[in-house]
Image 1 (cartoon, rainbow, N blue to C red):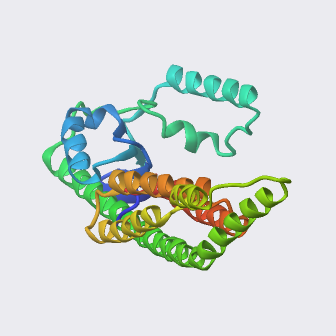
Image 2 (cartoon, helix red, strand yellow; image 1 turned 180 degrees about the vertical axis):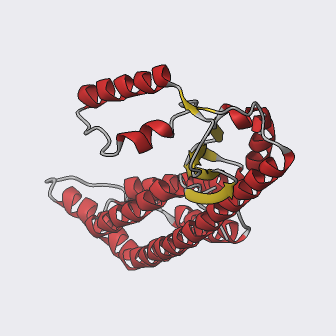
Length: 290
């Protein structure tokens, strides 16, 4: 079963007077592009977090975020006023520049920004980090589950599109013999219209054979059918096949394009256009496959 690179996971844990929330979001990318944002309280564990994520996420543009909320009546935490004002001004400036409405809940937005909250503790104790680590694992588990669900939907889509291309490939066959007869008739009629023109019929047959061979698409049909089967086999091989599926879809495109250039027949060209449309939908979505 293939997996998508798109996913989201979220987990929360409560510690004494703090609530720690972990969020992981993943989008498609050619390699693993991991962005980590967290309070200074957990900075010493950043490499451990990166290793935890990179081992299983493999590819994708991954945004990892830890934010902390105070849930106690009193707190020794302090708001970094200068940093908070700086974030506010930057967001307002970006809002005006891009024409995007500013956030409706300013404090919720600003307090989640990195290092706005200063913590009295310089480092998390072992019990606290163990709880946060469990939350990270849970968020990662949710993201992986999300990826599998998305992958299942993509696989169903690919199977549908591959079946459609295969069906269209069969639709071409009835037009092939008809196409050869039409080409031969058209050339013969053109020659007959030339007055007092005599031609070597043997040479004419040889030229016709050469011409028809150039229009022959049997090899392209065979290769395309093989690519379609190989695409389905590769999907069943499991996750981590995204790049390979991309290469196969490119090869499918080459065969379809060659058939289009050789078709020389209106109905066949219409079928080729429909095949290209189905393939483009595969190419768009295969970019999301892990």
